[in-house]
Image (cartoon, rainbow, N blue to C red; front, side):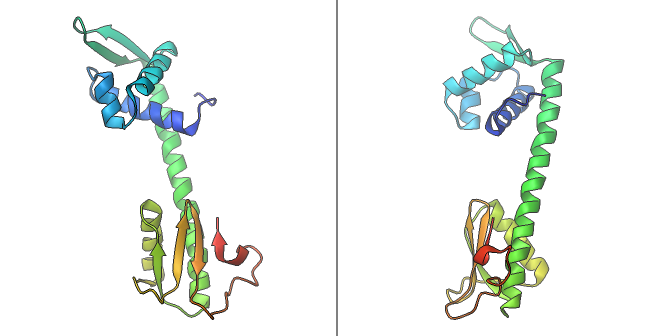
Length: 177
């Protein structure tokens, strides 16, 4: 597999191969629309996939092209899929671990509810972790908060409450990241 590609290039190649497999007659404009990128980006990636032997191009009609994934392209897609799954599970594990640390601090401070500051997949993982710990989710402005910045989490306790993690060397004052 190609190790010189960035994670973003691997993701783009996987998305393109998946779309091409589903619709070999897809146009570059349609592919760009579906992936939310410029046509020039699609063109660059397609040329690269073709030059590496992962995709072949055949003329379907005068102005219409058909993209065919080669056996090497199928192998690349399989490898990229496995890497994507590994990366996703690794991210999930890291967020769960950081969520657990925040909730341990929260429970040590005597709280059983929290407000999540942020949204998206990381907030969903935190919410599920809270449910497993029996910690209620609230929108109360007086409740402790878990703040999300990227994949970093920080527990914010209400004013005047000592931070139970301040004496713990690995928690860095409530930030987990």
